[in-house]
Image (spheres, rainbow, N blue to C red):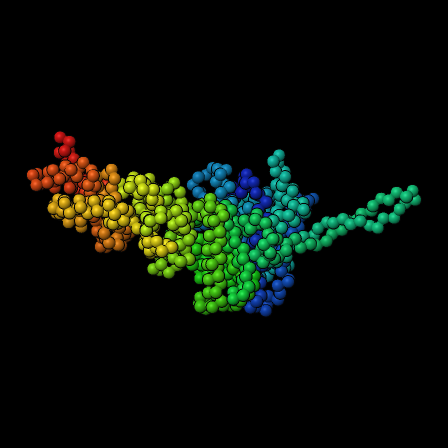
Length: 638
Ligand code: ADP
């Protein structure tokens, strides 16, 4: 008998969690063990394709389940690749891939919530057996080895590995079930109906037969006895049944698959713990022949907006996985989509390099892009609330897609966009905005800022509100870039309310502004020179109503864009928007300036500085010399 070995600390902790688990879906242990068995068979099957020595064909591979009620054991047997003693040690003594398990080892008393998250979120694999079993025995013989070994553990105290007898290559896992408790009937998992239904539920598409000897009853031909009573005679017999259909879910017809099945498949396959927002199942024939099962997750993965995120779909060729993350199947703007594509048109042995140039693959990718776009549009039209949820998670990516590659994808994406509108502070599509435009409204107006609330306070907004003109509030960094890339929608140009010349006024109003500008030309010039190159121009505003000043910009770079550019690392030369200081000619302060101009220009200069700093503050920009500003304001107060 070998010595008892200790689990590594992390494994021990996971094991503890499994043993004491209050997780309600303990039944997933079977799915995990079957998946492992299937993976092990995959490995040997792939070997058999290139190595005649394996001596097995596809139909030889199977997984066998045996329930023994008398002994309280459940046995799962596969004829896959098996494990050497070393592999038993390495694979079962420590958690495979423990890096992906983000649970906190430091926190030693497992909280219920945390347990559930860990179990639900990741395939916890082999250890889940300890949710239902008090003892686990793994008997395995690796392909190419003439010795077999048994790994045994009763939980946290450790495990042993010994040599054992086993004739055939593969693995046998024997679970000795826990005793029943008040809340939990562990022997349920030994009932054949239960096992059958669990296999159907979680493992139906496994590509190898999952078999079990089922005890059945049949009626014998009944013979009437002398009194004429007919008593049906029955007989029990054993029949080996294949429990799974082996048809991958994506090859089934849509009508055969329930939403729950789609969702379960997603969660298991892509390690998400929440249901997807949308499942898209397509089968197409024609220029590109393929089946695809695509999912829009309900939440962006934690690393989605980082460099470490890898996009891609699983790629199958006639049911055999050939690539786990085929990036070429998804454009960047739809990189959030998870799922798989199965096509008969692709060769199994195609290399990654060749695949990139594969014409068939390109056709599939194009067709997928169209499908995803149409499905999202449908969601936007028919399930708006859901779409807004989607938008919250992935809207930035779509907007980035509009801006990316000089707008190459803007036509595909423009109708998917949502922006908050000034009207009800609700998200609207561009189509909705345009359909509500006033008859003589030429532009689609937008304002950029940090938050909806802050934009709503901008002095320039007031006049638009008065006139009942809707303004789109752009709050993400990428927004203004996207809008500028779009240039227009439905022949209507976009216009920032901070750009000079918002073209909001009637002819008379314009005339009035023009007149005031001419009359006060010298004052405006003086204010500009007092600001010492900080602004390109000082003008009479067309936009202000009750506020005295605001900033606008000339040229392509807006103040918001200036902020975004300058917040980027590696941006050596600071970019500066051309600032225009707008003054409200109907504000009392303007009267004051007029009165002082010519008699006390010194004070006019000081006021110019204060007004400019005020305008900066309103825009949410830092003022250049806070000390001077404070000094000037105090001077006024005293
Ligand atoms: P995962 O399957 O996520 O890698 P598990 O804890 O379920 O994690 O399994 C750990 C490892 O043990 C597997 O990666 C595999 O190498 C090995 N293993 C588990 N079950 C079997 C089996 N039935 N046959 C061969 N190897 C197995």
